[in-house]
Length: 101
Image (tube, rainbow, N blue to C red; front, side, top):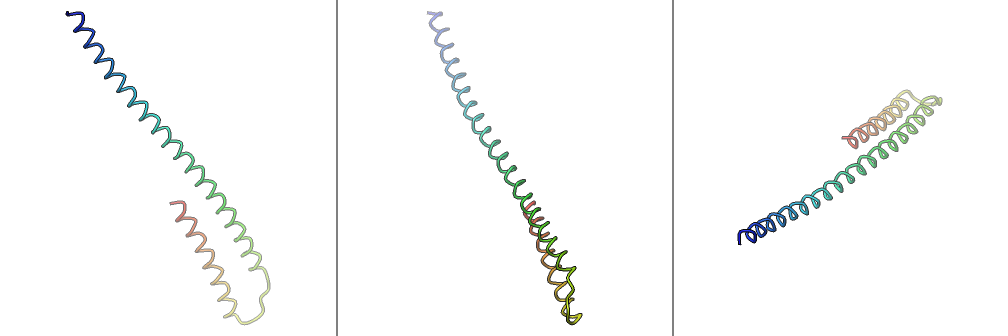
């Protein structure tokens, strides 16, 4: 009778340990999936940042080209064009900073 009691206790302990293992494996799977999702998100963010950087570089080159062109007219008109171009630059920088945060 004592041998049966010992076996029964061992069976319950084994079942409990196997259930714990199953629970841990489920948590491990969920954690691995979360890690992969974070890695994918980071990679996507880095690519987006590179795309924005390239776009900003192109826009700066366009602004640089425009600033080299001779503009005829009043100084007031030139100042307005420069202010508009500067506002575009400020907006672009702000958009990149907000995206990266």
